[in-house]
Amino acid sequence: MSYEIDKNKRVEQKYFNSKDNIVSEDDFNSFQKASKSFNSVFEKNQGKVWNDNIKTEFDLMFKKDLESDLTLPVDALRVEKNINKSEIENKSQKALENFEKKVSSLMPKVNKNSDITKKYTGSVEGLNEYLKDTPLKDLGQHFINVQEKYGVNALFLMSIIHTESKYGEVPAKGTKYNLAGLKRAKGGFQQPKSFEESIDNLASTLNRLYVKRGNNTPQKVHKGGYAASEDWSKKVVQEWENINKFIYSKNKDL
Image 1 (tube, rainbow, N blue to C red):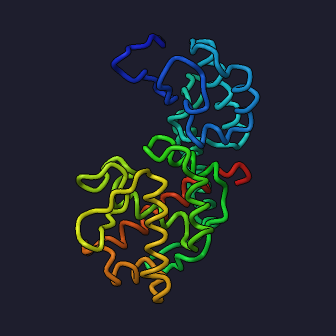
Image 2: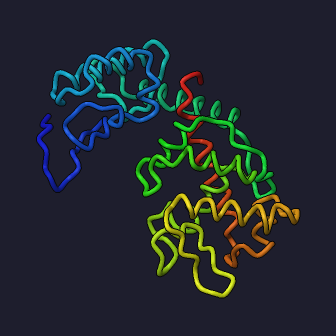
């Protein structure tokens, strides 16, 4: 298998997710990283150039852990000739289902009636990892700081920003940093000077115009006039669930 780099294309690897030819943690999904042997094998090879020997070492490690009842998705394995493919698929699928059930049972339940003033108590690292491929990279701590300052859940703030601007990829028309579509009292969109200021403005607005008036759920914020779109609160809750699932699926104690 070749690991040559094409500057214009992502490196294609069947079992890993490498964007370059260097072994790094981003090359693996959460289920692969849940393997009992992953840390020891990864520590030895981190920073090295991918080659067939390293690839085989990871393949064999995942296969060994699978056989010892730590099961992984079948696409995380190279199926060897002496292993029954259907057994691996069945075992992998069962493990994946069990893992997802455990994540679901542990993560906080959110819906259109969830209390947006209940604080997110997870790690900053979880937020930063979720945001790492967006314009809001490394702003996890800022979301938590704003949560403490205005009493609005950090994940709810993130979910609104995702719904309104895809985490800053598409800010309000005619603005550079307006993440949540907030407007001026005299008309036109607000012009914050940074993403941090925009996040702060969102939390402040929610606290002042919604929470203090008893509108403390996604549905009440919606009906209170935040957005005209009929499915706005549904989209916000869905992203809130997505963030929760991502953070809890990274929990190594599951």
